[in-house]
Length: 323
Image 1 (cartoon, rainbow, N blue to C red):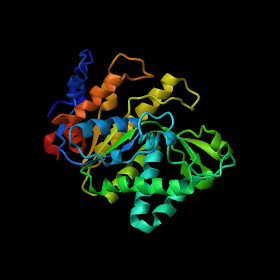
Image 2: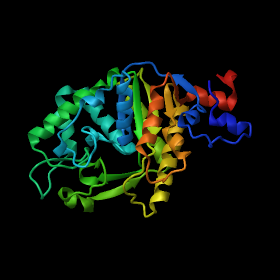
Image 3: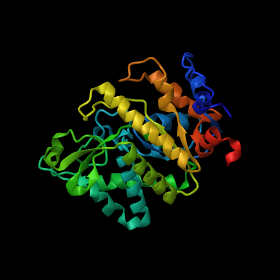
């Protein structure tokens, strides 16, 4: 097993950051073999990068089966980008929807209407849980939700569930008791603003959400391995009155601590250091080059994947005999 950051720190060694090879940096983490199988992906736009990388080398990735016409996802580079979930709150909300629908297949459409908003600007439905906020007909709203569930329900059979955390700032809409998929900046949602508030997580509340997410995944699929990662990609806007650089680092540090913390708590829950690899590079912290993203995600396709889990944490802190 490769030595992790904990081992370097314990022995007083400086963490090597001068090597230009990202993969060498990732080798500092414990490694585990990720056998070919099926992978369920949920999270920020970085989850879409992971989908494409794993699919290209033979993994079955069911969320790639879902897509929408371009007119329903304006400005998004991928046809399934409409299902990006950037925050812990949105990820938990999505897993809760899958759970409700799975409990009673006949309840699928009814469970989906908790996200259906009809405002003054349009008589059509805006799905608050999908990016884009493009109004669609009632028939299309229901059909799209059925198609999404057909793909999402395969979480029950997947060998791995990869969860990518992107932001700490979520927007809650009070009257419908749900979280917007992203900031409600749309002319179709103007009427919602006076009933909407910013819900930003801190270290404590983020951990509560993360543990609930693990619980939902375990209820849906008790045998899958869960992999948390943090997207290195910055948000387009930060709403916490801090400048972009501070907003970026505050958000990513909370999410990284949460992902590592929850992976240390549970068996078969791991942390994949995608953010760490990128954070070690000299770069503009508001942007990540496509080539950098490709190389980082590419390490997931290697035989030995840099993953830190529960046993690795206790090995590093207490020694291998502790277990």
